[in-house]
Length: 145
Image (spheres, rainbow, N blue to C red):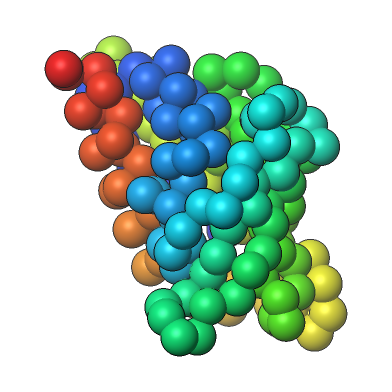
């Protein structure tokens, strides 16, 4: 259930994008705007208040940081009410030319958690692939000013 992308950006550059909660809507597919970011972001328990969808069908929601390993991994709980919650892990692995970013997503509330992992991945993969493409572009831009 992992989506991966190689980038020329370093792990630290990718981390800097993830650690900037205000950039969330620039790389997360479906997030349309950021309403607020907790000052402690991305510390565990901190929250990004965002909206999902396109006007006039916009839902207010939150994404919570669950665990942080700076420059290596960010674990999130994303809400998509009324559809439920998802557990998302973004990891960075250094390579000789930059890093590999991987995203792992699982539905964590019924009824979607009952959907087989293979089906969940098939449904989430196109969106997560685009999210990683955007994340890599933002990190590459920051690493090559």
